[in-house]
Image 1 (cartoon, helix red, strand yellow):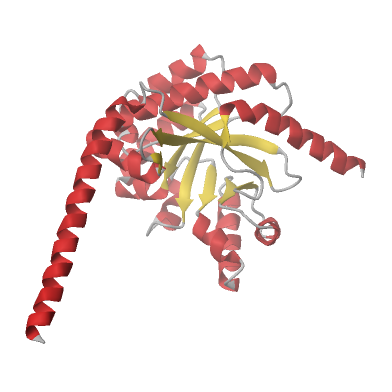
Image 2 (cartoon, helix red, strand yellow):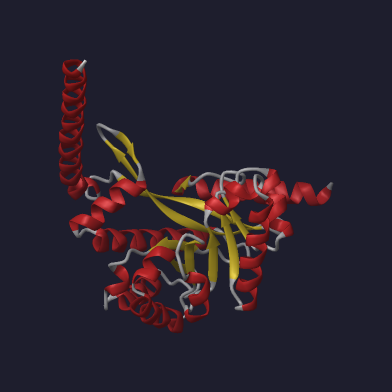
Amino acid sequence: RDVGAKRSRDTHVALFDQAMRQAVARRARLQEDLRRALSNEEIRLAYQPIVATDGGAVAGFEALARWQHPREGRIPPMEFIQLAEDMGLVVAFGEWALGCAAAQLADWSLRWQQTPRLYVTVNLSRRHLRDPHLLPRVRDWIRANRLERDQLRLEVTETIVMEDLETCRRTLQDLHDYGIRLSLDDFGTGHSSLACLHQLPVDVVKLDREFVTELTKDPRQEALVRAVTGLAHELAMDVVAEGVETEEQRALLTDAGVDYLQGYLHAAALEADDVLPWLEGSLRAADDGADR
C-alpha cells in the first residue's frame, strides 16, 4: 500500500509539474503575441449599452476590449489585460482604447442626432492613475474629436482606488475639475470604500454584478442595494447596476432606486458597426411601446 501511495503521489506531482510548465509556456507565447496584437488589429473595442432604468432609454456605452487570438480564439479580458499590466504595456494599451473610443464616439455623434448625446466610458488601470500625462492626453482626444467633456467618461475599479486612495483621489480630482465624469466600478468589492466614498470625486457608482446575481436569492441583498443607492444619491451620484440578466432583477433594481442598468437583459457588448442599427431598433421599439 505504501508503494501504491507513493506512485500515486509521484503521478500527481508529475501531472502538476507538466500543467505548470504548459501554463508558463502559454503565458510566454501570449506575451509575445500581445506585443503585436494591436498592430495586427486583433484587439478591438466592443460597446455595451447602459440604459436608463426609467423607460429604458440608452444613455451611453461602456467600451470593452476584446482580443481575438488567431490560434486560441477569444482570450478573456481579465487575462490579457493583466498580461499587459505585468508587461508594462497597459498605459499604451489604454491610450489606444481612449483614442479609439473618442474617434468612434465622434463618428456616432455626427450620425446620431438624438438627445441626450451619447457617451462612452473607458476603463483606467492603476498605472494610468499614476501617469502625470493622463489629463493632457484626455484633453487632446476630446479636442481633436470635437467632443463635449462629458461624452468621454472614465472608469476606475474600487480595488485600484483603495490600493492608493490619496494618489487616486488627486488624479480623479484633476480629471473631474476639467469636466470629465467619473465612475467607480465594482463597488462593494473593497474593504473600506463605503467610508471613503464621500472623499472621491466620482459621479457614478457601479454596483458589482455579484450584488445583482444574489439579488433574487437573498432578500438581504436588496437591502444592501437600497442602502448603497440611497447613500450615492445623497452624495449626488448616479447608480449603475452591472450584470443585469433577468426581468426580475430589473424590477428589483428599479424598485431600489437604481438609475441605470447594464447587462445581457438589454444587450451584450456590440461591435462598433452594430451600435447605430441597434440604437435605431431600440428607438423604434420604444416608439411602438408608446403607441400601444
